[in-house]
Length: 104
Image 1 (spheres, rainbow, N blue to C red):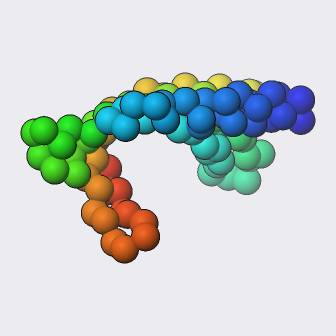
Image 2 (image 1 turned 45 degrees about the horizontal axis):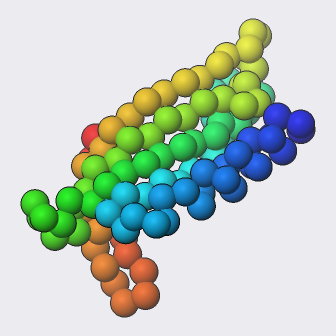
């Protein structure tokens, strides 16, 4: 529980970064890690950052995402997950919100 509390605090800090520069952004979230065969689930923290590239194509951007286990899933032995991914994104604006498909 202590790891999750610290992770949520770090997430709140990271979620507020990147607001001063409109073309760059940062955010985060939680990932629930599930294994087959009824193993105990884990929890990961997700950190992501990106940039809009409106000068190249309106509503187009790129993102990088890092996911790290904070509460490891268990399946006989502990399993620690660390992933790094990159995406091309496109913001589809719909009235008061937008849909953001990611390809990567």
